[in-house]
Length: 109
Image (cartoon, rainbow, N blue to C red; front, side, top):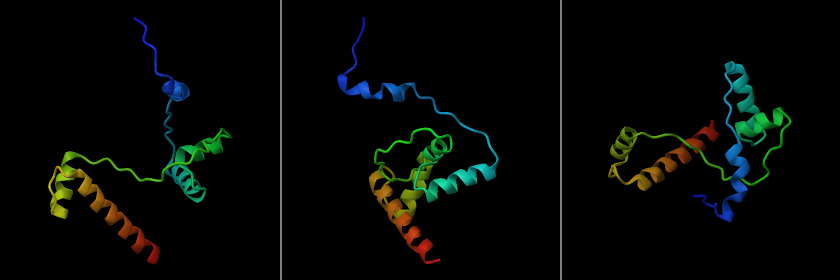
């Protein structure tokens, strides 16, 4: 049985064929790439593509920070904020407030 993919998925063909590559390099190289990416307002991936003279996506990207949180992390954060462990949206909102406060105090330094 052959199934057809929806037409709306056709644009993802190239992305599905892309392969993520990790580079084991010295800390100085990682720092240089990260610093250049920061100054150029690029992701580290886009900075590497720029260094390699490859095309860089011009699509607007939603600026965001990510972190992996375990169930234990959520338990600790819920206790810290006095929230229910299962209320992950409220925990996320409180973490966001902490990050905003951190950024404000970092700018004053």
